[in-house]
Amino acid sequence: MTPIRLSSLGAWSIATTLAAALAACSTAPPLPPRPVQLRVIGFNDYHGHLEAGSQTLTLPDPGKPGASLRVNVGGATAFAGLVKSLRDGAPHSVLVSSGDMIGAAPLVSTLFRHESTIDVMNAIGVDVGAPGNHEFDAGSGELQRVLGGGCAPNPAGATTTSCALKHYTGARFPLVAANVERAGGGSLLAPSWVRQVGPVKVGFIGAVTRWTPTIVVPSGVAGLRFIEEAEAINRAAAALKAQGVNALVVTMHEGGVIGSAEQPADWNDERCPGLRGPIVELAQRITPDVDLILTGHSHQGYRCVIDGRPVIQSFSYSRGLSATDLFIDPATGRVDRARTRSRNLPVLNERTDAAQRTALVAAQPAPWSAALREAKPDREVAQVVAQFSAAAAPRTQREVGRIGGSFERGERSAKVDSPAGRLIADAQLAATRDPAKGGAQLALMNPGGIRSDLLCRGTPPCAVTFGDAFTMQPFGNSLVVMSFSGAELKALLESQQPPGHSGAHLLHPSASLRYRWVAAAPHGQRAQDITIDGAPLRPEATYRVTVNSYLAEGGDGFVLLKNGRDRLGGELDLDALLAYLGSTPAPAAAPRIHWVE
Image 1 (cartoon, one colour):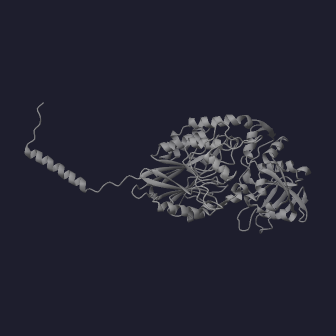
Image 2 (cartoon, helix red, strand yellow; image 1 turned 180 degrees about the vertical axis):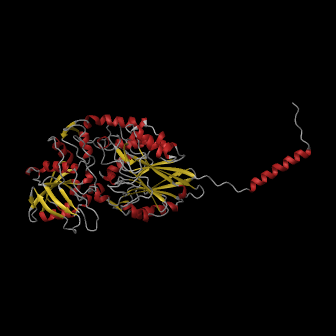
Image 3 (cartoon, helix red, strand yellow; image 1 turned 120 degrees about the vertical axis):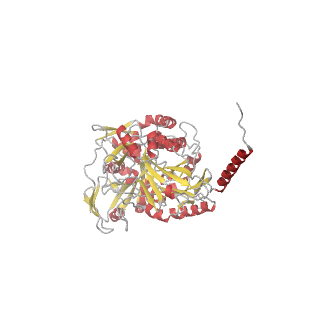
């Protein structure tokens, strides 16, 4: 091959052209740096629901505007699969809990002192979380053990077992709470946590509802103070900003609701029709420096945009996940809120109807449709759940009684007592009627303590397992019988709607107590025509009343119960229910509280 030779003139021409090109490049403005994308995957109120069971969600029907679908969802295996799919679709991701990961849980979690749930959360890859009120059920000392690891004592005859399968090593993620302080000074948990994401830092600030002391047994929060959430969050945000952390996320165990029982709202409708609850004021008071607010506690699904930032929650019990993409300027470390995108997604599982799955996936916008479509059950997590389920099975599957129909909880805000509430109250009265056990004349049950329905599947009478009963009553509260005058009992009933509150929080009564609730009447006159065992309430008479130990200490705001006299402790609430199931109870036909608008 003959080599090509350039004349001196040609060489000079090429050199000049190259020099000009290089000069032009050197004077052109540099391209702006690409934003850093962080996907924040959120969940709340998991409550140890490792197994899918019969969990469902009611979602808008993509093919029929105004209609809805009841979809089988949930369980740790499918939950982990959707988390992995969401992580695969983003360069950086963080998995965040907004509280109540443990507590008030099914047997597969509670039986093992929730070590099973933490092991599964480790396998899924939780990065950070906030405590919920139920993290304090067994006290701050037990919370510290659950986080730090180690085996709890296993006394003879105890319902629960620690280190049942192996030595428990604790959580591989922190819980953060800016608003929980020790009474003697200092914080129980770190207020925040910082994640390095490429060249930028992102701060995560935790908080739990300030009302935790009113909804947790007092021994669980002894020695702690719970300060106002926004105040604590803003203080933590200022500290992070001073450290140069400009992208901020709040994970908070407090929330709200949207829609109504008559007209449920779409959990992805950014308009959030009818949004109400503590989150409304909190979102307005939390510093504008916060870019995303993950919420919990109300067990609702919503995706609101308030003041240009998402405020989001994804139902409960492993049924949903939220996903939010934040795009962060690498030069300033600040979030470009105009580019933020978010979505609530159902945790579709092996029981989800194939046609429903196809329709729901197709209805999701990009990139969420791909994440939902590509999600597969996580085998590693399935193995962990299977080990604990097998260990719990002998106790879970044991038949303990039969029922003559389904006992359902209904809505906690319902205007009447529920079949499930009536069942538990009747069981507690039956366990304490004997004069030697307290001589109770009536029993009252808080709706929040009823954690599941007791369903009759098939033709009655239907078998009930220990697992069914335990899931309904998982707290291990003891029964307490105490005395009140008739006047005090009426005041207690009137306290179900304190002055200034727009709705009533009704306790569920045993069959021996009946009355009318006149919603339009002034405070102090709403509980009318009260009868005990068919006889009108006498203000001067003394009545023996049974409640669980949580209520007896003023739980759920019923502080008047702390004034009960001549107290006598009794058996566990679960044992009372188990004994009552031996009589094959059937659902009562009518409520015991007659609501009048």
